Length: 635
Ligand code: AMP
Image (cartoon, rainbow, N blue to C red; front, side, top):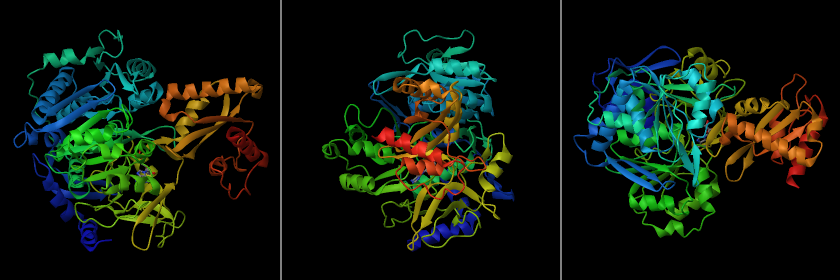
């Protein structure tokens, strides 16, 4: 590791108050904080105690003086052929209109607003409008279906939902409204009001009288609205974002206000090297944490223009991302390894077709970045490719290369070093002791977690502590649930999850959630879902299901029909994102004598590896069934 960065990191751990006190000056405070860190109730960390600020002020208002006419939001949809650029002044006006509309519906500080929207500019206005008035937003990824949406409604109990008629993917209209209606029908705590953006994608969108309101009409009523920012104490909640874990019930990751703003501002400086006036392009979606941190808040706080892109990397052709880079002189780009693997299949001439001289860095995150993909894009672009490892819970990178502090030589396959503020350790899973060089351990962070990380699980402090801080023996340490190793030069490598969470194209899914969806099909008695390595998506879910009545699949045709039905059940409940690549039917699942499903053995067989120690297996024939099912599907 470089000495300059080593000192920077060391200070952040030994003197967190001094370090973060300096970073705090990167944002505007309405009222100064009294104390940088209150860690009197471990593991809960309270940052910038007593300080008052507002995320929307920092992302929008404070730029009005120096850069009112500079690009702030660039909305590009290759799906609907719409492109619109908003200056900071225009963004401010749109956010005020939306904020006023929400206030007119009785939304106040602390109320939850659920945002279920495609990648359109209005989603950005809605998020910032919530921040402006102190409402807590809960953005739900548009690919989630009714059941997932209903469970998030019931947990967050939003007063208002903001949605749209539809999204569009690969030229196909993807309706949102019917899924929302169904979710509200299933919900125990339905919202009082729904605002709908009508993009004109669905003829005659149905509206529920008295509940559903039109975005355009509300906007017209508040054209000249000026809504003052509501100043919030640094530790009040700014948003909830649900993420998958080992249980079927997603956790609401709760983030604060001040620590969040400071952490993002610091990361834009020390990691992403984004400067005011430059353009940032993240290909993620607002439904994920990358969208929150690095489509909306981070770049705008840094005074950059941010691109919101509705489309895929290959439509109208495999050069579209690079065309956007040329057109808007993108300086910093952020994508996922899956997107690059998709591009690898395209004509390499696309990489040379456009003027990419503005581009300084390409950051990749969300899933392991394999060496061939990193090498390919690095050679193709001739720019630094920077892997960064983090999670919904942390909100900004745990491991990366601190480009703004020191450009340390990179090793393909490694996301780099512990970022400042993270007291990172690799701990032995059963002793809790630190492991040695090149030894596998659980990636853990000794608390307090730095600013910007989750403050708790929404409505469930106990779950926050027990889920994250009580899994490593003898130590209060935050577990990331990833395995890692550190080599002799100090580079970290991530080896995969320690739990049953899988990563499909950079999206995190709990196998438990998929199992619950499959189990709701009337024919299914029992099911195990595992993640299987996939060349393009990293991993895909594969299901092994036991039927209540095996005669249901007496013929090959019946088997295929039932497999299709099970997949459809997942589509309806979770969304296509959770759909298994295959559903294999077996008459029993491989289990230990104590009844635990041997997932790792099933996974090994699916990936053509040795299933490992099977001394505790209840019935050997179960594994043979898995082998037969996998073998039959390969041949
Ligand atoms: P999410 O919370 O959905 O962002 O998922 C976080 C998980 O994705 C991490 O715990 C890792 O398992 C995985 N992950 C994210 N970024 C990387 C990376 N750069 N390298 C390897 N795994 C990653």
